[in-house]
Image (cartoon, rainbow, N blue to C red; front, side, top):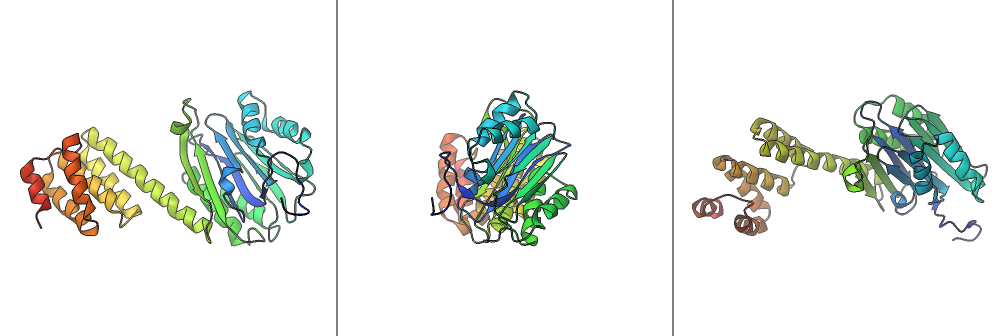
Length: 313
């Protein structure tokens, strides 16, 4: 810990930042987003659990607030009481900033009296925005305005809110890392199944621009998965639409083109698959090796004559 920075024995991280916790009214999804001039902010600030809620802990973070807050919410404790309990028991409360949202969209936030200016928060139904060490006091009002005026999937709305904060100055120190975490409305008991979006930019000159790019890539792979599912059900029109969407979201990615070709070939549309396979071979000859390895495993159902056609220059 740097000289003059208090330590409270809680594993505190110096994560002055801006963030949001939010809920999607239509889907019930819950999430959090954060950006800071600090390394790997996504590992300590945002916490979320499907069917329960989300927590952000920042300023001089108390990482224990994450699991503690989610546990209290899972017990049915309202956000206001959960925040009050955690703050009351914390010796470093004056330096903390904390926000909680539950599965119903109820929120509560706390900004300690010694959080570095400019600092503050705004709570509303389905969201809470909070910030400290900002360039100006316009940041969190702009974030609230952006969320209330946004539409679309929750992760994209969170992205819009973070970009809005940056548009009015953001962190007075600049920018370094960001994260978005979104979970389902209902938990399955398997955490990995419950995460809708889980993206981090740990160290980047323009973390929000990189996060926006990663979110597009994430949506591209979602479309690929949807295409595969449609293909398995024999819905060729839907699968091709999904594959085309994926490739438009992530142009130049030869792997998407390759697996699109595999799906076509496996569904009796070999002639349509040929130009796609050859497109990938032109970008990276190693895909030819992959082609040969898929046949023995049963993942590519082509005969030797068809394989020869594909490998022929």
